[in-house]
Image (cartoon, rainbow over all chains, first blue to last red; front, side):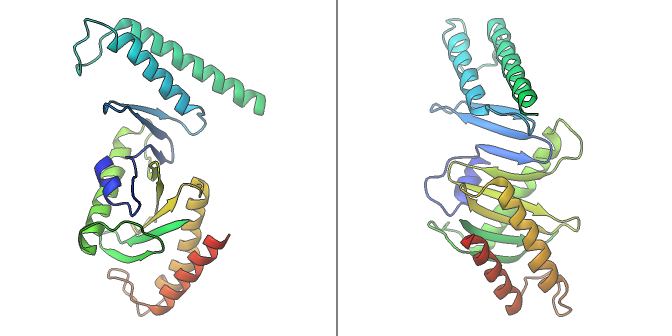
Length: 104
Length: 140
């Protein structure tokens, strides 16, 4: 899809798809220079996705890439990564809930 | 900034195409390009339907680092596809497409007894009204 979206555009220097919106959710993508892509699927109320994706990338570099036993490009089976990922997600959800509570 | 607009019928034929700003041309024929765009939309729609955490979801728009593609699909299967610059918000793009459908397509294409909506729209009135509509939106 990234190839088609860059080909069919009449504008030069476009990246692949960064966000995809539907009625019920938004898909956001972060692509590293090496081609690793991080996708999050969030609902319409979610804010701070860029930040979330960058934090997930941080966790990826810390727990996956810096792990000497991790075979590159294989499925990630690292408990520390899962644990910390869960913590980050919970943090972001709490922050969003707090923001929407203070706004309403 | 509105870059271009495609109108497809439910079979995937391109009923109308117009561009207002296009810096780079693809090196394929109009036909091929229309098929490419329609094919991509079709894949995106089925992708969304399958990956959605909720039932009966529909694809609305995507954006890259330089443009946004918005799609408005009617229950009859007619698809309005518009590429805009990122300065136009997602909401504005959707509103433009909705108004375009209501004020231009329904009034000057559907209500025209001489037009068959299964083949390319060949009506000067429609073309003029559409261009005027888009130009007024760009001036806002």
